[in-house]
Length: 319
Image (cartoon, rainbow, N blue to C red):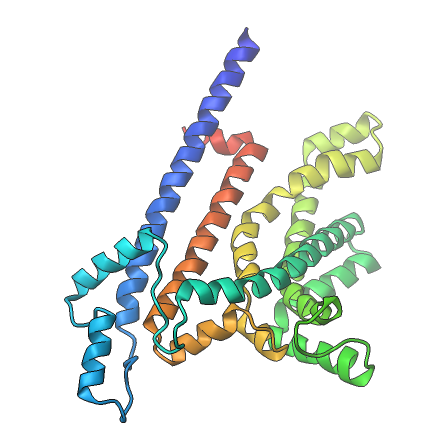
């Protein structure tokens, strides 16, 4: 009876925890959209700057995009359209809606990001565990060197090195385009290197901290095998700090990076995002920024919920 009551209370705490996180996520989305809308209007320049454009054409364009109305009216109209999934038309790309552009480019960025993420998280966890299990040894030294290099070398340097070594010098892999599996290997490795280094560093530190806990010493004193201690006790508890950084990491990797996409000629979101800023394409800047921001917020929300499921202490702290 007592067990059932505790289980019921735990379920209530979890529901309360999820509701709080969802409300916080919705409010954060609204603040983000509002801030981005007004900040974009403060960008220097004008989307219709063209010496060949006549005043009549300019007036028609401003009327079409609603720039002839007060800013607060523009904001209300944009929020209304956004609620219906309409992000408007690009001001520079002819007959292209922002939704179409995101729909065409995001699959490339997401495909590359998923490959990089799987590689980074799996290898990062393995290196972190190996380093912690061999503290002070050669393997630990090797893993620490990898972590330092990964967090120190910029993406564009890593991408250029991989292109030169594996593509130009040895001719093992293609250096550009995105037309098959072999084309994804180098950009995925370049994109994954920083995340791999970060995950391995966090996992190593967390494993070392967990290994000094009393329950680990108790398990050893009871004769539990080292493999069982590592898998059931150390990894299970040490992986929690890694989960906290996965939200922003997943969002940033899956939405692509301009540098990697430019180096390897990948038609992802990064290329269009940077071009939209330089061209003062308000609609595209707004749409892509909102898409990235909402994606990041949703990833953090999912991680928060999973963290609450994995660690009951988080839910208890919400009371």
